Length: 238
Picture 1 (cartoon, one colour):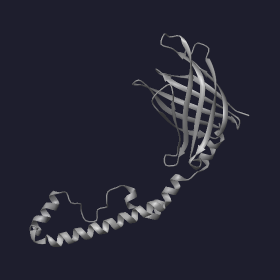
Picture 2 (tube, rainbow, N blue to C red):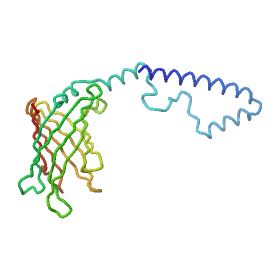
Picture 3 (cartoon, helix red, strand yellow):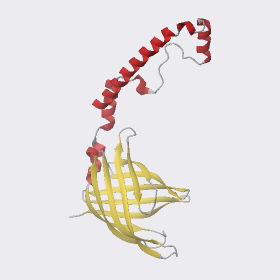
Picture 4 (cartoon, one colour):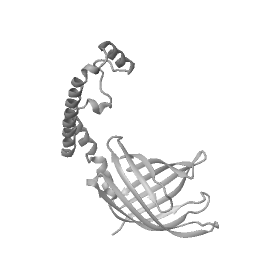
């Protein structure tokens, strides 16, 4: 905040210097200016703003420094919604069930996850390691190492939880936004995957069983129908 106020002070000083220079130039060039009537016409042609018009720049342009400082503190505050996410901090093991064919039994894989708080508890970063069987170029299942990273937080401005995800099986990032149901102890996120130009809507549900166990469920739209394609059971590592 001190840096912000210092920058505002520098800007004000620069503005004063430039205004003084401009005034000196105006006095120097008075003789070269066209008659007042022509000047007035030129202003109208240039779309001069009516007297008393507010400056452009949105709501922030009308806020005083104290109001801006208060808003910045409010947006940066760590609140109860951030504290909800603290429950995911720690070391975890997981079992992943995923369905390539909804009519067939799921494939299973295992792995580990590590979640830590960053930036004073405003964001939570999860690093995941494991292995999965996925279809190879010939259609046969092959085992591949899996590495992923997610960042979760609560946006005070939007009043929404959010999650970003990236992994070594893609080159893009997925953004989901969601809410929390205290009665169900469940987070629900909505996002969209991009499969080479084909966008698939996704719903993610995280059900908190207790402080040492939670379940992640992944649903995607396949045509007009929502289908569950993945379920990950997390257990806190001892």
